[in-house]
Image 1 (cartoon, rainbow, N blue to C red):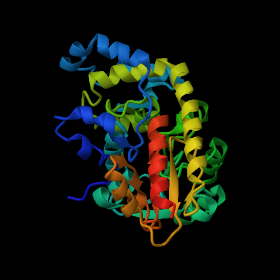
Image 2: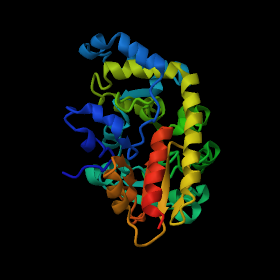
Image 3: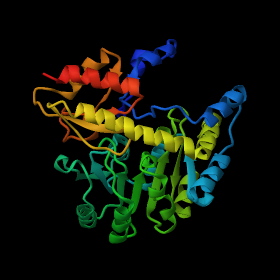
Image 4: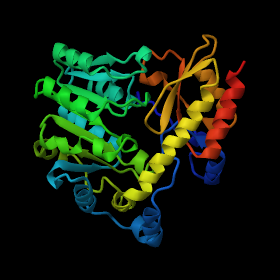
Length: 368
């Protein structure tokens, strides 16, 4: 069976049976986009204080308290929110119930590979790729996107914004312009997993009340440091929520995940500080790596960035393997686009010490 390719190879060094879990402190997992910082102290305090209860007890069936908290802090009616055990859980619930075999779906290229996988390999949809050019730093040209949508007339359009692996962001006003420029029967799905690095006010969550064809997927993994807890939510018209909610199993989000999600949403100040630190750490890495003449480092707004290998003799997979021998894990992005051609790497921002080690290791390999 063909599965979507993801990062996470670093667990091979830690031990996938968890018998040597303490090894995580000696491994740099920059091949996944997990937060470099800890969850809010409020999250950890609540979980630690009630850990045995949280582990042994069944959670609220359909994340009712989590949904109520999302509604309160994001200003979205509860009838427009659906919670799931991570964004992949929601993706694998929503898309097969919305898109059929041979339906046309337009996606970005490059883009997070989970969407290509489920659309092509699971559903068998007719995927149309809107190619982002490296000459333009992989930015979206909204006018060309509008033209592509209106020419192909897909059933659905899927964007990741900010986009992974490119780190590029399409401003909210441009997305609203696109929505107003295409037929309203075309479903428009936006994955906003990294939006908080830009600012929560730039999210289009509330705009589902104005556009019935708009669906927003929000993972709480990367921006709230809850990747292990598996928490996410989907925002859409009440009609879409009604159609999909019956396919969400009870207890889809663990009790630990629900509690963590609620407490994280309450601590805006802590996370805002971490986002600002992330921007600083990312820029420090980019500034240092940009001194290497054999690579191009692309700008980014999120907790990761893209590197292009300019020397034709150097291959991404070779760099990845050399770094793994040092317990440093970064991502070869080939699975996200055929145009990458074993020449691009994505690296996640980690803490200052790990970032320094990553930069020094890359310099040693690439400065020749």
